[in-house]
Structure formats: C-alpha cells, structure tokens
Length: 69
Image (tube, rainbow, N blue to C red; front, top):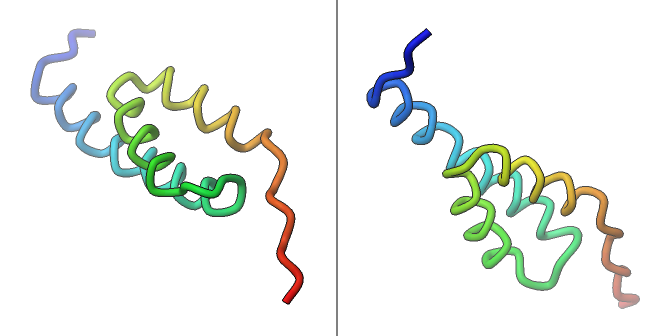
C-alpha cells in the first residue's frame, strides 16, 4: 500500500489537533502549565509515535494536589 502526500497531510491535519486537545486536558489535571503542554503535544503530533509516547507519559504522571479553599 502506498501512502501519498494527500493522505499523509490529511492524517497529520487530523492528528495534530487531537493530540493537542488530549494533551491540554491531561495537562490541566497534571501540570501547572497546560497551554505549553498542549503546544508540545501538538508538535509531537507531527510524529504520531512520539505523540502517543508523550500522552502515555502524561497520563501516567500523578495528578496535582487540589488546593484547599
């Protein structure tokens, strides 16, 4: 099976926002800088294997302690 540039571009166009959104929502729970985490996740979405590894490491990270009000 041959992957042409159009298919590759479409896959990347779909995966980058997905990885960025997943990274953002995980980053809200697990880091203090979710926007930076989302940007890094979006860039790593250009290489899907690295994006999946990043999300897996982020998911395994422990949650931040909730502040008592």
